[in-house]
Length: 275
Image (tube, rainbow, N blue to C red; front, side, top):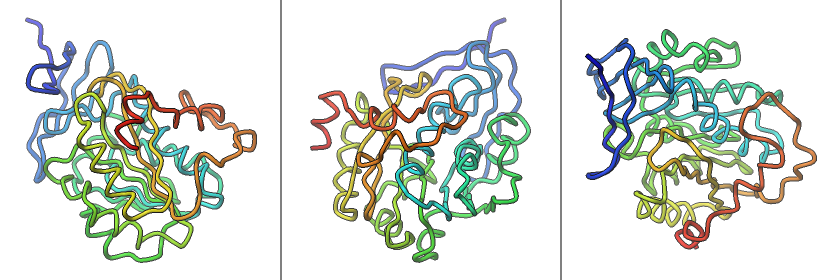
């Protein structure tokens, strides 16, 4: 008998992958968590029925959360990751020599635990000496720390369940206050095909808080529609002002110095959403 995993991405559309093995399927204190082995994408982390990351395409998302932001800030020594318990964003951050400290705050310790066990290549940086891991509410952490971080990265699920507070103007104001005077942040902001309203509302809220706001995108095959957006809010530094010839080459599979500015060139229908 064949087993298939289906993610219902809208009321009438979804993706399906053939399952080789189910490693974990449990209700944590915060969400339904599954680790499944698939034929096409390898090991897949699923939270509340939504694919978070897979062996095959994880590098796209994790590189694009980390590198555009870190290459925009001239001296990103103190970095906070909200969510991201799988460790992929942390792994990419650690490729930057200027980073002295990475704080990861994820509300669900089970994500961290199972990622270390079943996604070791993604979670490889979580035990690095520069990394502090806190199982806590990222929303509360932001509001308890002022003027502390150079860069904040919000690697959240979609705005449901424990992540709902991470898509509010109050959260972005908290991020602003947790950043130093020239700090910046980046967050995943979903896809324009099915979540245009979300992209517009996030863009509007971030613009009310930060003077520099830019949207960029990448192709992530297992995410709804494949076209995934990210929003950067900055107190001072503009990612479009970065000299791409000065960006050091690092070990990446998707992001490159030339792609840095190219990622901010939006398809017109997306550009229209964020005008």
